[in-house]
Image 1 (tube, each protein chain N blue to C red):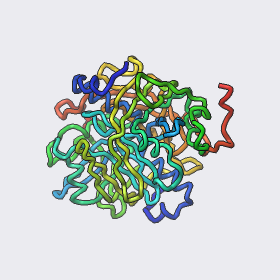
Image 2: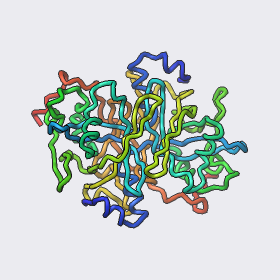
Image 3: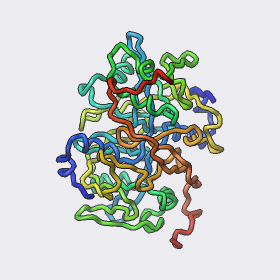
Image 4: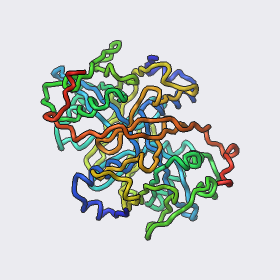
Length: 212
Length: 212
């Protein structure tokens, strides 16, 4: 299959959306938790969480256009500054998927999808109890992406909670150890199996690829 | 393990970088191909490629600070506007990893890591022949992320090449069908196994989670 921009744009809309949402490779599967000014908790699945930097610890995610549909996650973050990012694991992937259904404003996706709220220390926004790796985030910046009316939301990690055994000797999270999932497109989920860990790449220590 | 911002910042530097680079979940593994004004091709591994939109088809990626080290990918895109994004598969993951070593400016990572350049139609920048899913990108926008001197680079898909069998009936890429890998942190790689595909989430069609 070889498609140019014009051929992509001529595709049937749903097929085009499915295709372009899946051409970047495997995506992380996270639930973002917020609370509205009326005290209603909200939970939404996002596949666009991305590392921004480690000093200070910053993560971003891409938000769809404001005016497209109701955007509870956006409004709640703008109103209250705090949100949680919770990893999705094999044992509740279907519940997590259904947080994307359009519920009434006054109901919580925690209730509708049978996921439990968990409050940690004095962090003002609920975490997902079922999630093993979770972060309390403080909103830092919204960066408009004018080319298609999306935005990059950046937050700082205020609190990070996970089992000690989720990291390896280098301090790196091993997502397979907590049965994390990845997502492709809008609705396909994948389990992860570690296949290799290579040292920091130095040209003096390269394997001999000439034998290939 | 429970860490607040201050405790994260007090960690030993490499451990902190490893930890924060791996807390967002599994990341896509892509090689970005460019060419310099001197005609030297460049290949660099990126784990931050993110979906920006399907209308028009846009992808972004996060670029580290300009002044941190030599940034061939950035300079080449600024000079020549075109780049390629190439998925990484199981059979060349170690070669792909070593594109991150610091080679001299006049040598190509294609040569050093024994990956083959492939030119497709009149697209001016080389693709990775070993990659089954690859895109020719046109630079559209660089958005500064001033909070930590990184940038979001956005490009439009000009050409998309992949095997017909890489997509499912919904038009979605199934990364497991082409042995795609994901990455955690800076150097751990994962194979993918499809575990479920759920319909577009409508609240009227929700499974009965009350039995859980």
